[in-house]
Length: 149
Length: 396
Image 1 (cartoon, chains in turn cyan, yellow):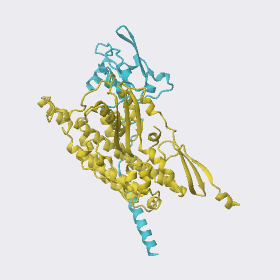
Image 2 (cartoon, rainbow over the protein chains, first blue to last red):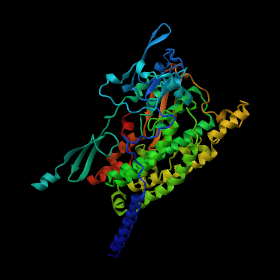
Image 3 (tube, rainbow over the protein chains, first blue to last red):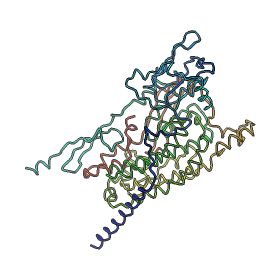
Image 4 (cartoon, each protein chain N blue to C red):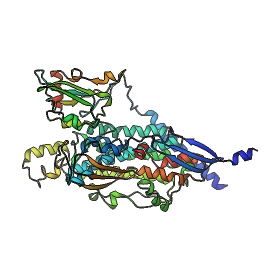
């Protein structure tokens, strides 16, 4: 009987202690962000959508050496078509990309970068296949990304 | 007539979609009334062929896929894979890279245990701790994002070291977090440890004797809760754990409650290890090391500022033509769930001939039928939740 009473008292005390700890949280600042209105600050190394850089005069840095294609874990994700020395077509299927960053590290010229863009939802899979025009950044933007690394 | 019906065994199906399984696991259970007589786990719903995929990809191409074997403790799996490849290829890892690996791995262990704590209590019906642990995990994950570029699939280690150094100010932030964490663990313990409802549901439930655990190959916190002193960080140190003072966290009875106690103790231990490692890291703070490197510039191997041990990668390998010599290697890592083993056979080409993963959760699922036998159905979740099973790791 006394045991039972002791047990009950200690249970009540412990639950009260737990509740007091939970109550403390009422007076703390919320840590969540109201996402679509407020966006998180992303780190300098964030791995988002892939993009191609250009020289200040607008020409491609990419030589079409296919190194990115060979280190990519998703087979045939990056497709490059060359015409002579010029890179004619450069397509990346962002829908299948796993954002591992292997290609940007392997690129000998530093032509491929990962931007901070992460809102990539779209209505169909076909629109997620980015061609060279969609991937290439303007010379001004390229300068910004070059200075990052 | 009703008695006859009750006495009859009933076959029920738990899962494949169940909130407490971290994935999809199906349990076919035979119940007699409310007593569990027999359990058959059905696994394979998350099978992605991770071992087979390795055979058609080069060593570097397989590296990001290793992260996906267990998404809650990616660093450990990458480390296991990298150690095995380094052993075959004979690559040496600089000390600084090893320390960076150790610090990130210990942070990852805390993040993984925190998520376990939240989901375990959610299984028992307590919802608020889930939000508290996610709040703390968020801070660790933000640190990882700053360091590696992503929140879950880090792809940060490479053969012979790590890819990048700590960014400026990272170490100060990490130390701040280490100072803050123990007070937060105290908070969890105030809510959970002596809560009478929690005690009723976990104390003396799902007792795993040391013999049962050893027979089934259980490792990690689950076996340490039974009193078996098996911690690879202490018994066969792999990274630079030999230079640090690792204290294994043990408990005696091996019930669900002890598994909780061991994991909380391990999180505190990890915090201590991180603080010790940050103190001992060769080269210290990256900003200062950079200046010292420029000032010294001697490029000798034994130099304190620009020697081999201060590098991030020992010897850079070409990702396309990297071909380890013929041979095989095994590496073992103490991951948050137990011993992770990676076995690689190389046949001299740039693709591995065979990659085998030994994952600790696989053993934990096997021991579940023994633990829940002749128990009440309501004890299933306290037992299964306490084992910390992550299903992608079982099926891989």
